[in-house]
Image 1 (tube, rainbow, N blue to C red):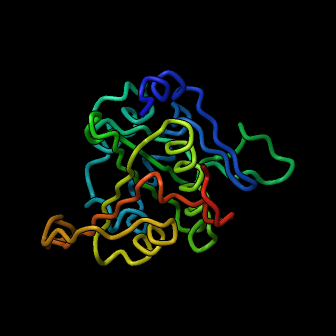
Image 2: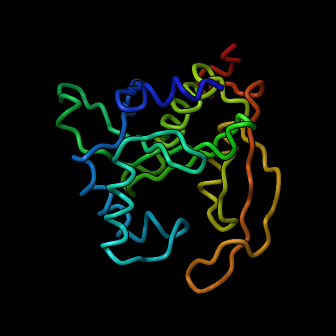
Length: 203
């Protein structure tokens, strides 16, 4: 895994698909990131409500420099590409994130969230495909993992559409909305990755 390369290129990272651009979360995105965290429709299965000061501090941290430490999230803004509108004038519709779990294991955890009007349009799959292609094809990540609350069916179905396999059930692992929730663990080995749109191996 070429972690140093990812650290060196993170600030200027730009991944493109026909409908989306992924770029490093920046200062201009902080207000939208805070608004997304305050929207319970987005955050229901991710995190319980928190004070705006805490949300703001986390959003500013995500928008800052990424150094690749174990457990430090690299956050990429998901920006739509409507015809005729410059990228710089487009507000992000969500984020995808990744972080090193243990560098020696060459494994990274991924996550994502999109605003409600971006749901059910295939944009989550498209954004994650861009991220997976880069992490596996360019950075050489050996394995990707993801965690998902069992009740969040839309999320784990997206993971399965991406080719990730359910590897474990963590019983009563996450406390959300007043109760302990089971959580699924998903994994994808680099050799298993097939870009969903193409249906063919990237190597």
